[in-house]
Image: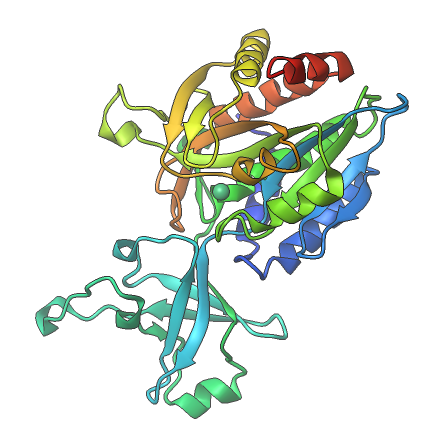
Length: 356
Ligand SMILES: [Zn+2]
């Protein structure tokens, strides 16, 4: 079970709108939280936001705990004569999930407009072939001028509305953007936990931008931080609805993500992650994914960076109705604290040596 404070934080971070390239509101929130815990602000020129807590140990290694700020969504493309908005996807969303969804547009001044994605009534025939041109975003405008006068312009952000609800007495949660507000939440929890503890390494905590469009912020922030070890927090697609033997079962603990499209995991780090999960008395499950995470960019920085993913699985990923398990979130938190409590220069040198 999560505490009231933890649930509130998850609600706040899932309900802030942030698509790739337009993450400023969430970045501001994360920055304020990091500063509240005494972390010193670190930023790249794309908008990634991190804080550092320096170690008193001389020549301490740098460990980065990274989530990503952006969620999948849409950008306004054009306005039709009838006043409908046409939009383009930012990040991968299945068009099967779009019809009759409630949506929210953010104007340049930050004001929000509510709308829907129109669905042609079944008795009128026409079904979509899945192209974004088939979808009319309807904000109630009666004509193009109406939308223009309201301040609607190309490039503005639209997200699907996905309110935060606690399910089944707190066992599960549903909301939009758990990918990757799970990570944003956990990163902030690490800042809170380690705020007053002396560590044998510089702890960098925060979130990148533009992960969903190709790990872009991960590349730029790597140059700023130049980590010795990166730990990537993200949500992976659950496959438990396909059967009990499938990888990615909700409520069965953290994912030992040994392979994905963006990175073949470091076996030394996987073994360490497993050992730490056992030490924290947290269950874990092996997981491979056809997708990728920011780890794909981090581990290729400079001559290569030791990188580990620390993920949980979620149902209906990349929709506004993503379901996660609070036991998994707790498990991820406990085992990540254990991982960080057991890392030091010597351990990192050992990991590096394994490849030489
Ligand atoms: Zn993600």
